[in-house]
Image (cartoon, rainbow, N blue to C red; front, top):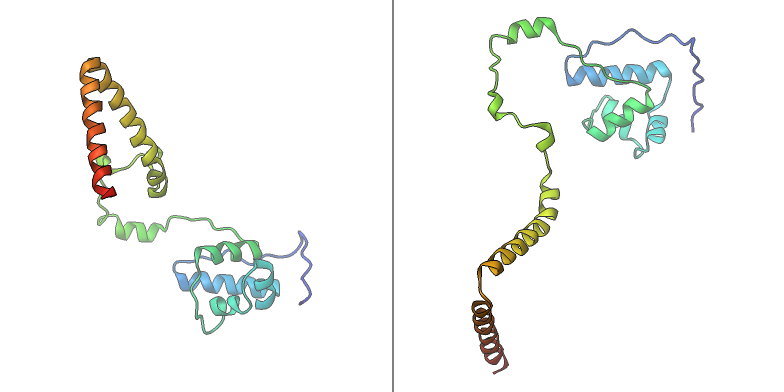
Length: 166
C-alpha cells in the first residue's frame, strides 16, 4: 500500500475547472488525483473498487465509463464536490429553440411512486376494495337472497369436486 499524502488546510488547491463535457470531467478527475499524488491503486483501495478499475476509467485506455456509483466514489476519494453553473453563452444560443412544456403535462413531485411500490400495494388495495364491495352488496340484499346465492355457490363447488374426484 502506498503512503498516504498528508493534507493540511495550507495545501494550495488547483484552480476551479470548467467542465463542459464527459472528456473534460475525466480529465479534471485525473488532474485532481495527480495533484494529490494518489496512485490508481490507492484510489481503488480507498473507494472499494476492484483492482485496476481506476486505471480503466481515468487511464489512457479508458476501457470503462464513469458509472453513477464510481462517480460518487471518485468525488469522495478525491474530496471533490460538483456545482452546476448556467453557461450564459450556450443559453443565449439555445434559448430560441427551447419550447416550454405545458403545465398540464408536468407531474407533481409528490405523485411519483415507483412501479415496485405500486405492484406490492396493488393486492392490498384490491383486497380492501373487494371487501368494501362485498359489504355494499350485502346491505342491499335480503337474508333470503343471500341464502339463495350461498346455496348456488355451494352446489357449484360440489359439482366441481365431483368432477375432479372422478
